[in-house]
Length: 328
Image (cartoon, rainbow, N blue to C red; front, side, top):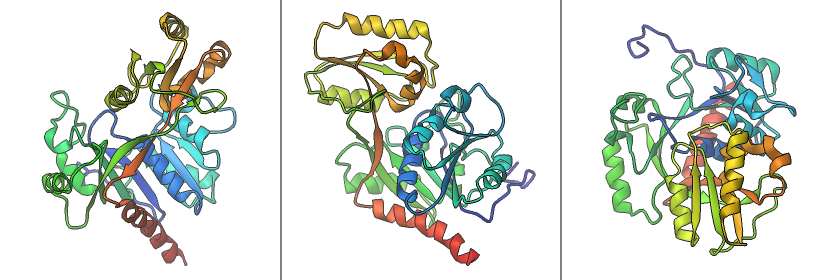
């Protein structure tokens, strides 16, 4: 109906960047939002706007020093904790929420919409569409037969397509083959990234982990696609065990006792509990009960391949600067 103009999309005379995908599950939207924040925060006042999936509240809200993950959702809480200098807002109706952000934070220079590619009532000026290297949208099917929550032709609305979670050493031949398969328009650019894991840090003290390949790991994981993390652990550590939970799982006391029992059963004296940053924000509430446990979080980032990160950065900043020039 949006394509046929039966429903109308609203645009803003203001820089709005959308990060999204066509499939359900993890394609790396959260680390892409974080990449944009790191790129732009030194130069602009940034706001992120998310729906706040699985939060216990409704309507519009802006994170403050007392906010919890239950109030705004785990991804927004992750942004709030990692980047205290930005505005982190939530709201189901982005068309309503964007003016509210600008009213409450009038110094905002740009808004990054997290997971809003299907929210067609807002027409973002710059759309970044992510697709998993191992599950390209061109090879996927709509739900329930596959993982697509949108039709493939919707990809034409994006200014940039990023193939994420690529294997290390992706060849130029395969790069070209994938670009041909995606068949971008003349106005679109296709980029490729791989996951880059950072050094694990303690969930409560932020101290970096002193671990070796011999360290035994209990992986506690509640994300949509843990396969890349499992592959990383398999390649770098002799042994790990895993407790798997549903995506966006809200941890409770029973889960906590299960994690403790599983960890205490591990025989090695050189052992840690490892979790993702998304899971970490949902486990913060158990600090008093987990303070004596070596609970570490592993951060991830996008690393652009083929030395094209600079091109991506320039496309983003050029879009924003275009609005500044119009204002001047």
